[in-house]
Length: 241
Image (cartoon, rainbow, N blue to C red):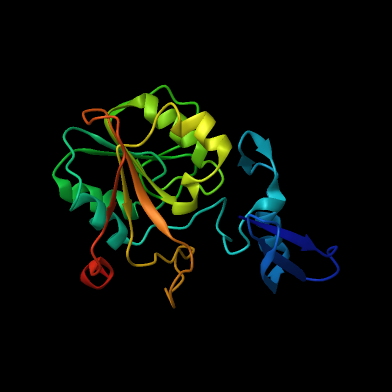
């Protein structure tokens, strides 16, 4: 799924844009028109936005007006993970954003390292997980929307114990991912959410419910190679929201 934008030339302070959400089969499921200021438009067309090694600013999510792909993870989604997965040793949150997930991970009682490519006022900035040579006992994060495959390839190598990524459930599909990821490095457990997660840009009041299914995908170096499919019980959203 991707969001494509068609922007009219700068004719005034407000630039009208159309965003089309495309489904995997090429269909169109959503089309909205939004208006942005010139400043916001420049942010949304930032040529430094890197997707899978290439510069593709037109693929950027139109809702994110505060830099590339910044959608903090609701705390309850991380609570669901740490109540069902134990962690020993340091936990590295390598795409920490404003620290929303890191603060929950600290409740495990384990040391938490936080870093991000961008400076969002929390953790160590300027750290590119895809090129960093650092490792950790455990790595836990919600990867940037369009860099998930790169995060899997890097994380599986750098985590000594557990590597957990919050991913769209549909990420498990696809012949290419089977060939490049799951055929060689299948996850140990897939924790499917019974409740839908809704992601909003930082500072936006949550409203409504999402339509995309998510799961925590966990690679456990201490576990057998077979993949277990599990479900989180309902109630985490109300308990921790």
